[in-house]
Amino acid sequence: MNLSIPVYSTLNGENLQNVANPLERTVTDRSTGEFDFVAQTEQFVDKTDLIIDLGPDSAVGGMARRNLAGTGIRVISFKPETGWSELFTTNPAQVKAGKVWE
Image 1 (tube, one colour):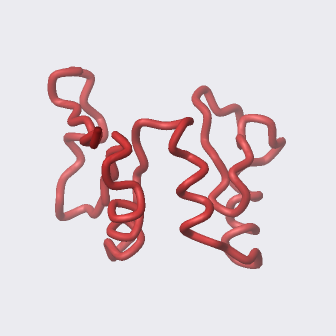
Image 2 (cartoon, one colour):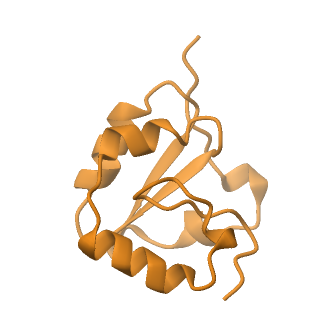
């Protein structure tokens, strides 16, 4: 599997483009690895504009939103009932940016 955009491990921040099987690695890391959520999200501040939270609950997205408030990073908590439009739009005007506190 080749990733065309950088996807970072939530366990250690490693760029998964450099991993032979990123899906297997992610499942293994999430199932067996220790995880420091605050430390991991803080290391993404200079590397990303968007975090997508996938799952049935928005707790992780809420923590990321609070931890990264004011950095300009947008957190989307994706749930099927909220719709797919923002994730798959090709219109740049429909993409919302995170707020930057200065």
